Amino acid sequence: MDTSPAPPTPLKPRQEAFYQRVRAVYREAGMTPPSVREASRIVGAPPDAIRAMLQVGIERGEIADAGEGVYFAVETLHALAEQLRSLPPPIKVAQVRDLTGSSRRYAAAALRWLREQGKLPSSMHDN
Image (cartoon, rainbow, N blue to C red; front, side, top):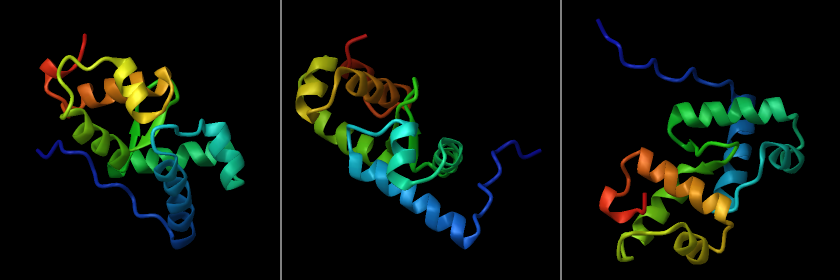
């Protein structure tokens, strides 16, 4: 019996275009991503529509749910992981904040997601 998750349902062309707009907002934001409400204002769509597209991105592996309402483009976090590999361990939230010019909230969320996804060796982060 196959227990692997089903592939994401393909979107209709208009939905796909909308998804790509939402994804672009998060890619361009880098380490200072908008809240769902801010993304709603930027894109001009209701927050529920933004949440639905974020869920599509999560299913596709293109959006990271870092918890506490923080979402990043996955490529942003992969690039951060590459940068962090050049720092001596343990990596502290303040170092990530300073390196990225983001807030402590975003730096902590990014580190947590990278750790949970196994993108950083455990020796690299401060528990």
